[in-house]
Image (tube, rainbow, N blue to C red; front, side):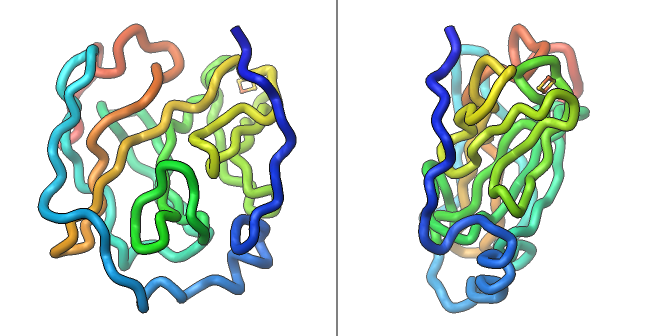
Length: 181
Ligand code: FES
């Protein structure tokens, strides 16, 4: 069944390119969040690897870092949206990550900074990274799989520890590939 489609909601401090540029560089002042090293996520499909993907120092609002997770070739996006968002981590709860594979036919999605949305290059499905990858506009039938993140409070390292949702084309996110080290 398709998810309910809604238009994006305006939110103070988030999203448009102008806001992201204005927000740049403000992260340094704030304290860090979770305590201790992250744990591996255990899901029905198996045990997800714990993979360091960046450090808080590497991110500024609007910046995107691409990485593979949970297996090599499973392209994903890490981004700082510049404001508190659903499922966000980091000092401002503004950092989230998603699979890059559109849930329609698997084309790549990229962050459109003006819209503040993840947009598919093939048929322009739109997903809201502020709301756990929710579908704003189809034809994509379901939300983008969200990568679970944790931050090491002592180092600022950001770890991928799991995936919420099935990556396009997969019957199990952890099968048929080589694990990222
Ligand atoms: S593959 Fe993304 S909208 Fe069709």
